[in-house]
Image (cartoon, rainbow, N blue to C red; front, side, top):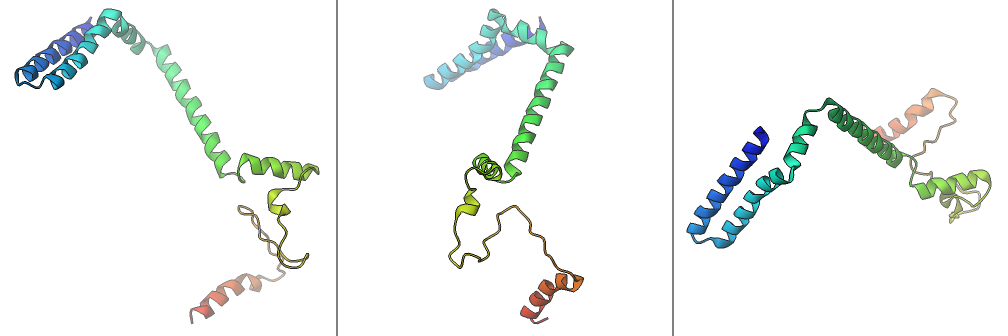
Amino acid sequence: MLAETICSAASAAGLGIAAVTAYRKRFLAATRIAAYSLVPIGLVLTGVVEWVAGIAFKPSVWLGFGLLAVAWVLFMTTRAVERRGSGTRKERRAAERAARGGAVAPAASAPSLGSPGARTQPVPGTRTRRSSASPDDDFSDIEAILKKHGI
């Protein structure tokens, strides 16, 4: 009952503003305001306001909205994880086929310009391990950078 009264008052106020706007000879704006002000009373007369008011105060409806929100968060999380994974779906399928012995993966199919035994570029997103026996080799990169900058 309260929602219907508020919608009726909003429509009456809107029609009043439309009348004042028409009095100022701004007929296009007045017509647009009148159209917007008739929407709340139209919703009341069709029963939409009563339906929405009935839904808004039911805990089961809010539980349903909560479950929809959880499902949406899970869906978006899986999409984000999938995008951060190793390449696109097409690249993963090609890699799976290569692992099974089917077609060759796109990264491995490109021949290098050097000799057949030449080293190829590492695939982005994968890490290579160093096979260094001593921990002094770990600092060789740092020493090279420092020497380059004169430190």
